Length: 556
Image (cartoon, rainbow, N blue to C red; front, side, top):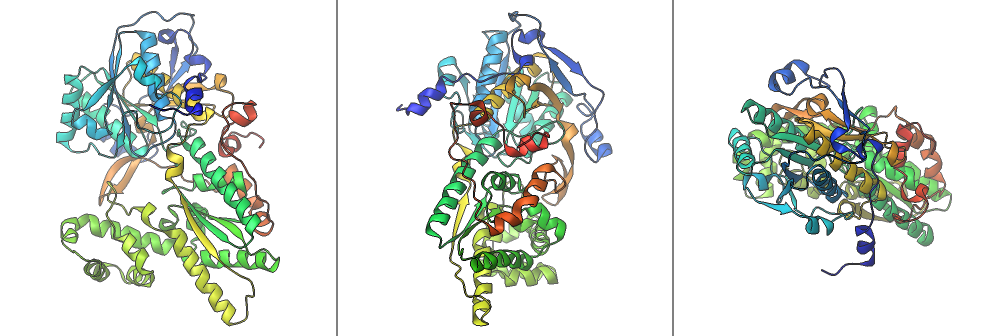
């Protein structure tokens, strides 16, 4: 296989580990805290997870020896679940190296193409030569990923049968909030069936919404936002050079605006919409458009008919009237999926839907451009929800802003120019070469999962904390999966899920953004982060995201 010079250099990179994961792994001390509670719906979750609910946080302390005495060999399965995120290969590499450090006869099997590979019993053994081809690289192509959900009784039993047949001691699920909810359900089911197979999770998602008091950031967020920020900076430089276009850039992040906020802090655009603020202020599409129009007009009056607008992918679900519409559509199509599938044309689908929506939602749906209506009725995601990434919100905003300026020009209220281009930065960031931060973080997460396996724990999420500090000061731990859960409606029914973390409007990252956005709106104050750097001063190569540093109380 042909490799680039950067690939070769990254193969040689040695990820940094926290002190507690160095040296004698098997004697790394684990301190257990008091019993834990879920973040909500405690009574229901305690009943649903009678075997795993209430477990304590397991914090690691430094080992006491230079050598790791050999432990019994174990067989472990690992699966990548959901969308790609930079660093996944290093989780597997860290897990592999940790298992081999404990016993060279331990074996690691990678289930192919996500959870579906468990149900189909398709896996490959990960060997030293094989893992070396993927160290410090992006993507999930090592074993592939998928979005299959293990949720029916037959599927749970099949997963257990496969683990038993392969004589697995543990299964590690690398995924986001839904995937790790699945891991919690598997751990509970295995214990109900009196199985000793352990199930552990690892926090993955570029969206940054799998975080809480115990999980400071999910892996991949750092690399993805740096990748997007480089592209945004390039466009800002082009906008300032050509001085004739407004660039509307949609960024990944369906349920939260962490990506948009971090990119705004890194690049200082003229406008950045934060979905959580839209919901808090109950802004309509019209008020969002009016705000953009006002900022474009003021820059035009200063002779600057160009700019950059950042739009979070999930914005449309936070606009009150759109949220109500999408909620009604999700419930309506989930409960009538069989009939809806028989409607063969968009016209038939639209007519059927309009008759069953509430009066307000029907009005909103009918007032939307045809293409947005069609996108709202497209195939649902595996959880029965609108596939927000397919809704071209950035184009909707451009269309509405353009219409507003046409009206203003006809009345002599605007003499400038408004010409817009649209972009969507999504897949560009999911498989980038991981930053040093993500390479180190993911490798540490893999090692952490190994120690949790060695300690006999199940129903836990691997965690590494104190991440704003240098890597040797990071703190490894195991967090009970049920601790992060509550009950939410999915497919029209209440289900246990790990709660997503939204942007905190009272948090330091948003407050920093809010303090400067009016200045950035009027002045061309663009900031150019440039490409990810892998070699050089630590403040350039190893520094965590601005969001993480601000949340940790550090100066930025």
